[in-house]
Image (cartoon, rainbow, N blue to C red):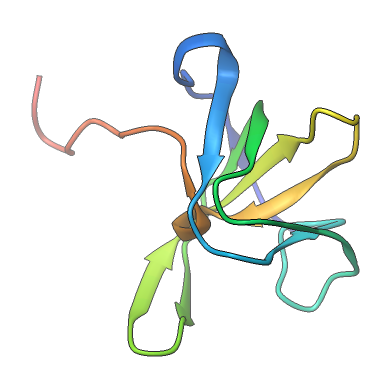
Amino acid sequence: MWALESIQAPEKNQIIENINNLKLRSSPDLKSEVVGELKLGSKVIFAGEVTDSLYTINLGKKEVTEPYVKVKTWKGLEGWVYGAGVDYYKKQVEGTY
């Protein structure tokens, strides 16, 4: 279905939501059940997983390609958000040291 990779998250595993009403989904798929919505600027906890597959989604005036990121809200709700909707990590550029 999808493979996951473990990555380092920012300090204290906290990430910030940067798209208003970002959907929190039960699995990393646009068609999966929506279990919640995050408001602009919401802080969530990085749950340590990112899909290794990238998904291209049209966000209105911009088309972006990102993975899904697993997060947990401060109230304990856990799910997947589209990576373009959160500031979470920077990957090393392939081919560099």
